[in-house]
Amino acid sequence: MTVSRAAEASPEEKGLVFDIQRFSIHDGPGIRTCVFLKGCPLRCAWCSNPESQGRQPELMWDRRSGRSTTVGDWMTVDEVMAVVLRDKDYYEHSGGGMTLSGGEFMIQPEFSLALIEAAHRQQITVVGETSGLAQPAVFSSIVDQLDFVMMDVKHYDPMRHVEVTRARLPLILQNAAYLENSRTPHVFRIPVIPGVNDTPDDAEGFAEMLTEYGITAVELVPFHQYGKGKYADLDRPYGFEDSPSLTPEDLTEFRSRLESHGVTASISD
Image (cartoon, rainbow, N blue to C red):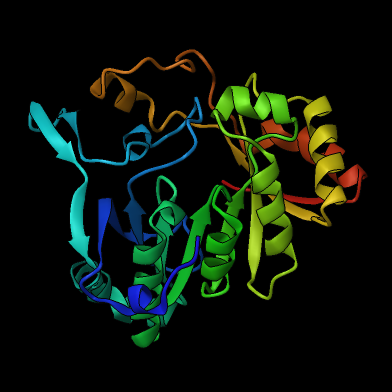
């Protein structure tokens, strides 16, 4: 799949957005506005934003209003940028900007590229948070335009990866190799999930896979329960009801195992 320059630049391009979060401090450097695009090719069993997965607007129970609301609005580039530009002064003082997230924002490549171009015209940096699951031509065309990339690596075992995400691993690794060798600053992240990929043996498996692809540094993201209530609001089952949230201290041995194989690891708060 190729992405035309005409599509990239069009302010009339519409995308499906399910949230725009201002004053975010966990989605890249500085103060950022995080634009969450709806639609994802993965179905991670622990997903903290399950409302992001579908590719069309959908109903979700809203506890605050006590009624169902529609998740997902079709917005133009100009409509999104009108929100992003409200906090331009904060970006300039904090080194922040706009972050594209999801879901998987690369599932809407033309709209994503149009947003990146619009932000850059305003001297606003753009970070992308991605699963890495996109066709290589799409992935490379977007990565090359971003100022920073945060890419998750969910599992090292191809069969287990399919089981827990319903997506195949090889294409993700192909894109990870491209990112590692690109000029775009980036960080690879491992979401550490109880019962999925959290054992010392799992750390060994990740280390072997990462070093094979020339990746020598990662950020570990401890499992949390922030999205727990959303599954009930969407009337969907949630398989991690009784799984404990992890702390940075819980990942000490995991980090040590990675570092013993030459993979530097930090742990996010």
